Image (tube, rainbow, N blue to C red; front, top):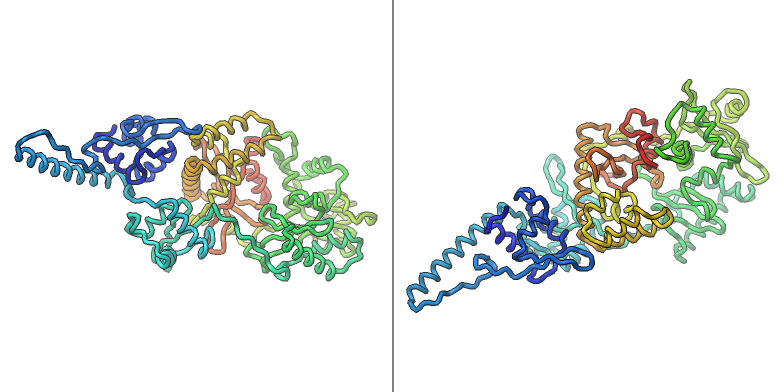
Length: 600
């Protein structure tokens, strides 16, 4: 438990950041004390609630707007360094007064030294504070010069800020590193540069609008599949030059009239009765941008491209036929209503990958379409999908799932396709499938938490939130039906964004979970899985996060390798979505993920 001197230290610490009679939230106090090295357990308190009760002499508990808050009171104690009043006793003798003054001064000096010593041991950055206005000024300066979530040497940033008169010493810091570490949106990392240790930092701008990039149309690659699709829709009556000219005209019109939209980090351009998608390429392609999809306005989901191009009379029955032909595998999650849900998703995204890579095969006369499903039979024969062109509507109708060379459709496949359709190729470098623990992992926590709040366990949020409104929304989410959940999740995201204490606490514990997962990967490289991330058309790594229970994975962090060889945490995925992404690269029988244990 606290001694009297330690209570005085904590009171002085609070006064160095907060003013008297200032109302403080519970989470704000907890985070501030944690950041300065004070753990309640080290002083034999079960929780911070018990710790704050012990400090009731200068912290008054209250409830304001659904939040538990504390009022910083005027703590009347002559030993507190902040109170410099010297108490003079009632005496008529000069010597008595003189002795008292001397004794009081001596006692206060000793107390000051003792407080300083104890504070140094107990508290790390107690006397340092950067106000919100200063942080805003600094972030505005950084925004003009440095890009978000990229690594910059600390020395470069320091030189830049000094140029604009930012003096870290005015805020009690001995170095610029400590000053910038007090910013929630700046993360420091140490790495070797030419065998010399150097400090780098990355910056996020949560309050800034993301800069929209509009490349010149000449920089956008148009794959053959786009021309083929458009020609089919036009009834073979239009040339490729006219298609390109039309798409270019609609592109600049959409930018000028602001009729474009964004969907899954993809620029959507309306073009008459159609819409087409412009996407940024991965770093391994020869072009920076490409058109990834063209189709009807009411049918622009990535997963729908498959059934938009190939027509099925009864797709569910055909999926059952495919499951019987392929090697035996579990194709649904626990409690799934659709017993072939995983297989259906697998087929959709396998087609999407081949489509994006221009690997869907067409016969020379364009009468047949085929692609390699990536699945095999018990005899290790590759399974293909074969479709035939219906010339009355220029649509490809599904014919069969088949292997090469067998009678009927297998013979048609061999007669019309040479070479046979290839399997989806997700990478040319096997190193892309493994996590290099020597590199740095940077995560945009604001995006991950606020934009993907529906992918986090509600129990995790509920445990860390100290806001009655947030807890009320969570209770509603647990009870509500599906059609109202989106609205409630939007409300939850907004409530967390407004409550900085809860947001910072979620960031803190998520960061701890990521650090622990990286340590697991260093111990066992199989712990992280590789998967295909359809929305970005890239290979990603799936880092399992344990947020609620150390024995169970709650979600996965999607980790993408950047050009610098560092890693970027892009988003989070629920366990079932991570499974379907990882299954695209191959069966998962020898991993810790079992679909029979994953709830749909």
